[in-house]
Every structure is written in C-alpha cells, then in structure tokens.
Amino acid sequence: EVQLVESGGGSVQAGGSLTLSCEASGFTFSSYCMGWFRQSPGKEREGVATIGNGGEVTYYADSGQGRFTISRDSAKSTVYLRMDGLKPEDSAKYYCAAGRPALSRGTPICTIPKVPYPYTGQGTQVTVSS
Image 1 (tube, one colour):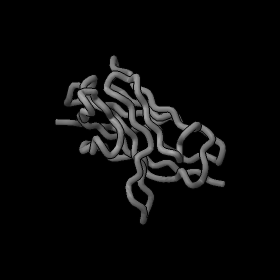
Image 2: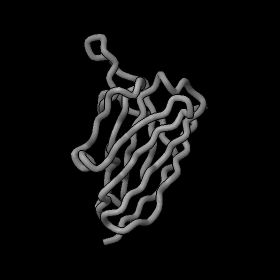
Image 3: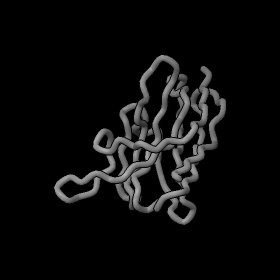
C-alpha cells in the first residue's frame, strides 16, 4: 500500500522559510516521480514542483520559481520542499504526491500533467501571515 506522510508545515511570517518533508513507503521510491501540490479553500489543486525518479530533473510552477526547491533522498525514501521568501498567497494545504513516469520519445518524464500523480498524502498546512 502506497503511503505518503507529510510533515513540516506551520505558521510563518511573510519572508520566512519552511521545509516540508514527505516519507514514502509501500512502493519502489526510486522508480516513481515525486511532487508537491497545494490547495487552498475554494481553489483547485495546483502543482508546485516535481522531481524525476532519479532526482536529476525538476520542474517548478511559476508561483514557486526561484523560491522553492524540491529534492529527494532515496536512502530515506523522502522528498523535500524547501520554501523561502514565503508570501501570504502561499498559504495552503501542501500535499506530497507520487506517480509513475510517463514516456516521451522513450525518455521518462515527470512533469504535470503528463504524470497525473494519483497517490497523495494527507497534507500539511502552511499559513503565511503578512
């Protein structure tokens, strides 16, 4: 059974930093793309960042470009999201997600929406005050 357990959320002031963690189990971590999504009340789920199963390729939504860093540690089956320069509009529940890579001309890719990321955790709340 795929399990994704997020931690690290909290309340910070604008300009602050947080690092979210997600421990994965129940699947071969190194074979899966990993990603972070977020959702706030009344809004659709938004992809924040993804990272290839080998850890060498990353993708960031415009909203987090230059401020967020996604990384993964295969030895710990854990994916991280470092968030700097937080803004009030970053307030949301953040979800870790996993999905099998898609193939593009024989090359595995992990971008959204090519990979639907069907497995998600319970989420961790991030609140940024101005």
